[in-house]
Amino acid sequence: MRILTALLLTLAATAAGAQGYPSKPVRLIVPYPAGGIVEIIARAVVENVAANWNNPIIVEPKPGANGSIGTDAVAKSAPDGYTWLLATLSHTSNPSLQKDVPWHPTADFAGVTVLATVPALAVVPASLPATSLLEFVALAKSHPGKFNYLMPGTGSSMHLNSELLKLSAGIDVVAVPYKGLPPAVPDLLSGALSFGLLSVPLAAPHIKAGTLRALAIASPTRSAQFPDVPTFAEAGFPEAQVVSWFAILVPAKTPRAIVARVNQELDRALRDPEVVRRLEGAGANVAAPAKPEEVDAMLKKEVARWAKFVKDARIEAQ
Image (cartoon, rainbow, N blue to C red; front, top):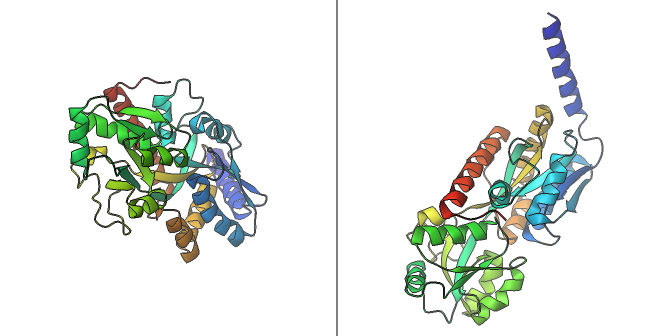
């Protein structure tokens, strides 16, 4: 009887806490530099939530160690619903690619929802004699080690997409690291880079100008802007297709009532036409509604996928 009473009191306290939530500013940690697509997606959604709640949500870029510094700050914060993380695919790949990551991608976090996915176009310089992904693979096979690819960050979707293509196609192309995508565009245009994956808004003007050629898109469906460009699966490499996702996570042990409240509010914001317009303008696709437990399951699946891939590809943790 005492156990039941204690349980009921705990549930009542949790519900009461959720009813009064939020009562102070919320921090959304973006573990990447300011101004990038991760921050753009974050602001598009949470500015709507903050206005609806009439409560500030402070977007705080906290870059470093390929996202690990900001992620660790959230993992170690109080599980009270006032610190959120904008996580990307690298949240689930970093522990396999980096040594001594101080946080665990699932044990230290609770999923809330997925905000968006961002397709990436596989492009080559117009000077390269390849008009399809199969032709690029054939070219790379005939010249092992001669060609290279844009690598904008260890564990990024572009990095993993390219490495999966190498593994599945059996080609040898060399990674060239850059701090983000924009600094690499001039080298793609000049031919100093042979291959890269770019966001649709970043690639579009150069494709239309004829200076870059799109070979495939890393997305389950084709782009409305480039309907003639096949997906990686349609181009013959389904196993090399990586979907870049952006999700909201909170520290583990955050009360489930608060997690549910945030999930409902974020899903409401994602149906707002203005939020949709801003996300699509950034080259993102609004994600389908996801329950917190579905996000948790996705994280576990992604962690297992990238751990296996890193082992199979014999990539050494840095």
